[in-house]
Length: 176
Image (cartoon, rainbow, N blue to C red; front, side, top):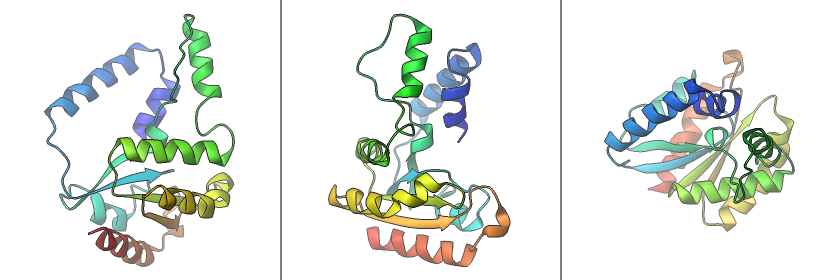
């Protein structure tokens, strides 16, 4: 989520440049991921004990990418930095039809060599909820097993921790 915020809100600032340089430095020192590689669509409920148990500092499974941290895929860049920033907003995969978002998710999941995808149906996001079944069908047709996981990325009282733990565990086991 932090990457998603910085590469959109802080775009073009010295702080974003410093953050990106530090991120690249850490990435160059990091060991290769082991275990199952998961690409996450929508918000990640970091407060969830079930999600932490499945992915936090685990060698058996890692989240290797998240759509909210992805930047737009542009082939053409404008000379004017403000025009370029506007293009990044207009052509971002979250701006437009669900098929644009699904296509970007499939492309990014394949770029990260994901073994599977979690499509998180955040309770308040009609765009995500409405597109979940089409997304599952399209991701799986592209060879990416997909778990549709219901929950609330913001409100802990809408948890369902037992169901989240069971479904994530079964999904990760299925990928083995």
